[in-house]
Length: 413
Image (cartoon, rainbow, N blue to C red; front, side, top):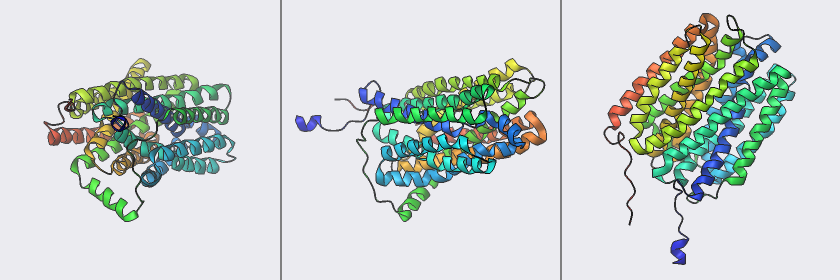
């Protein structure tokens, strides 16, 4: 009996281990997203301070997400050798330290370089979190666990936008960045205190050849390939909307203060709720069904932002945000379920595509906004979402009927 009692079991919803692991990952998600988007709400202030265009100011976001995308795969490889928790904790500490230095950047060039390095430091959390959950959480609870982690990222995204925008109105963008970086540090501390020891991780020697072979194997999987492309379209559209919406609302006919525009980011809480709900529904009803419902909701929310009516814009952004996070929760959880081995590499490829979409489309969206304003920006994001909708249709068709229903319950004896 003592031997049986020592056998490790995966964390299931309702257990103390499940609560600890999801709370720890909630803190890590909050820290990473608060740091990642801490300059997004400050883009108009940066444009005014340095007399730069929206596309140039948006480099403070795009460089971070771009370098994060490029660092995702190396970070996942390192985690195979040194462990998931070690990499995530190192990433959180390094990102917090860099964030605390950014407000003291003497020039725009130094700020941009600092934000690029910030992206490299941040990569360890998103690169590893999905694989960590897939290893430590029971398959029947993976969707809800992923939903809790992504809920943490939504709160982090909210904090990383509303805190700087509020502080900037009574101070300046440097103090705003400093306050946001302290929040990142707090999230990292929560992760360090709560995360339980890994039960199922086995270190592997890092090999470039083996890594390339694993990546190539995932890229030959047609379901995973579509999920990767889906991540690119999702994040590309999402970052574009939030990058340039502030410019629209601070200009005529709205002319809102930055603190008021910052309140719009409270709508991130819609994503907090939908990510949790989508994760549970995916466990019970199947991923394809939930993803197929989330995508049209995202498109509908985008279209509601077109009229020059503040109420319609607020409702539209809320619907858009909720749909986006529901879709991302399901897609990211699906990657871990499809990849039965080398999950860190599979998660890394999804996140590489995801953040690359945010970097490339987010930067290009600035050029679109400068040329055609908000209607052209909506058209650009709509094209990304239409491509994603076609991918969702293909996923539903190729994985039916297995993915339409809930995963079978484990055998009990």
